[in-house]
Amino acid sequence: MRLPIVLECPPRAILTLAVFLGAALTPSFAATSYTISLINPEQHLVEVKIVLAEGSTRRELQLPVWNALYQVRDFAQYVNWVRAKDRAGRAVAVRKLDKGRWQITGAQDVAIVEYQIFLDSFGPFGAQFNSHHAFLNLAQVLMYPVDARNGPMAVRFSQVPKTWHVATPLTPLSEGGFGADNYDRLVDSPVEIGDFKESDFDEGGARYRVIVDAEPVDYDMEKIVAMLSKIVAAATTWMNDRPYDCYMFIYHFPHGPAGGGMEHAYSTAISLNADALAKSSEALASVTAHEFFHLWNVKRIRPQTLEPVDYTKENYTRALWFSEGCTSTAADFIELRGGLIDEVRFEQALASAISELERRPAHLTQSAEESSLDAWLEGDAYYRRPERSISYYNKGELLGITLDLAVREASHGQASLREVFQWMNQNYAKKGRFFADSNGVREAAEAVSHADLGWFFTKYVAGTEEIPWNDFFRSVGLRVVEGTNTVPDAGFTASRNFDGPMTVAAVTAGSAAERAGLQLGDAILEINGKMAAQEFSQEMAQLAPGGSIALKIRGRRGGERELRWKAGSSEEVSYELKDVENITAEQQSRRAAWLKGEAQISQGTQLQE
Ligand SMILES: [Zn+2]
Image (cartoon, rainbow, N blue to C red; front, side):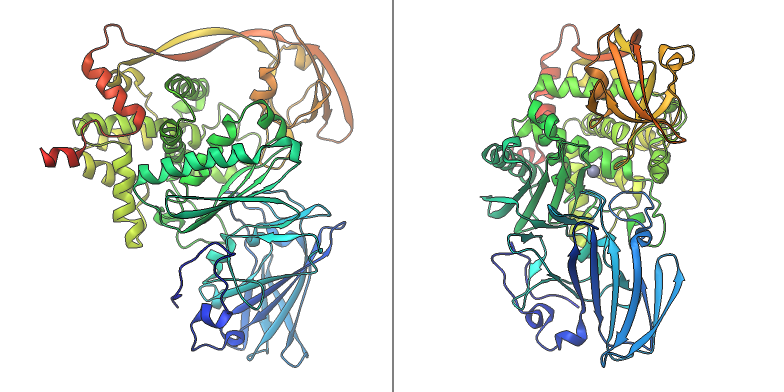
């Protein structure tokens, strides 16, 4: 079923469900209709009513086991009860088939399924309802009818407190509620319900809505809008495309741990720690540019291995180095073009990304493709250890940088990563096709550079060969210089899953941390009297060699303790990007094009000459 309408910002397009679905249909029989009732904020309980359109005698309903994050989270664990009735109100049988699937028998006309679900995991990957607000990742809340997943859906909200409003990129319906043309689109639309602040702006013919749910003292809406205008202008001109009329940004700035960003086709939801935001708006610009670029890369330029989405188990893909990592590379160029970072900051960030990769021993044992497949293990602290895994974000961002330089070299300056993305947009996204993971990226890179780039993919994408940085950076007149720094050494490393506590991942043998009693798996609640709300590296950056460390921890067998010791120091390898000696005019010219994220010689210009 195709929809005869263009999605617009909710305040502009008020349609009836019949119009939304096409006039010939009787809406109540054609669509799966959901009502989400916010029944108890203290207990974090909502009740969902699903009116299933008529269908066969036996219907199955599935609640996804994963969504948003590549981690199986079994949302069914939060379902308290399920019941069903027919149109006349007679109870019909509900039979549980597995942990996340239910079968309804004997309601061939219309069946009404009701269930209660507990929602208290914070955004942007979770669903949460409390006395402050509701933020809903709908895949965590809504079961789908297995035989009607691709059919139209409507959702409405009930028992919403009087002072709360609803913000979502879904299309509003005149009879109340919102519509989507299938389940995937429905759950690709986050919902914020509460007493939030809102702004909007137009840029390049599109409308942007900005929703912020945070303490007013913690942010400046005008500054956020100014930053967003730069990002969307830079991104749409870089891609030479704008595949939407309306886009929504949803922000939360909590004082506790914050979840990060989640991309959607027509929106993004971003959660950033308020103290980190107070120090610098750099992280906000960086995560926003990344999530915004995802509207192309991963939402529309999409690997075949992620389609169709399998909500019942892991969806394995080797392409996250590109879909995530190269999204970060694109975000770097967008920030440069938008004037949000300068050359110095860009090269510093690249150097620290190189340092991060080189310091992880696993860069010699786990490839970028394997890291993508293993994304499903990221919830486990052991997996996150430097000797066990690399990050497909980190290596993928650097592969985006080096692939860009390789394409420039192979095409004699006529193409860059920008042309690779535009080619994939034209040849895949615009044609409704999906790309064949790394081979699809290679196809695009070779098409725009007219050269064989198999070596790049074999060695650095599928393989674990050391990346010869200087061979890549020489063309733009830069070299990577290795050095060592004396850094404070706390004697342990820690990491966290997206919503979990910071957890000790390794304790250095013979260190003061070990003598103080710190153990693998201990959860860190406070560092030097403050809640451990940021990333481990950010927390440790505030430490000096010889400085005092006080940790409040919860041990693996329970029980809170305080441990104290003094930090030591250690030598750490780090990398810097510096100009080569005697930089040539040609290198300078290439550098200038590189910093714009553009081909040095535009193919259009060449044709005109
Ligand atoms: Zn991402």
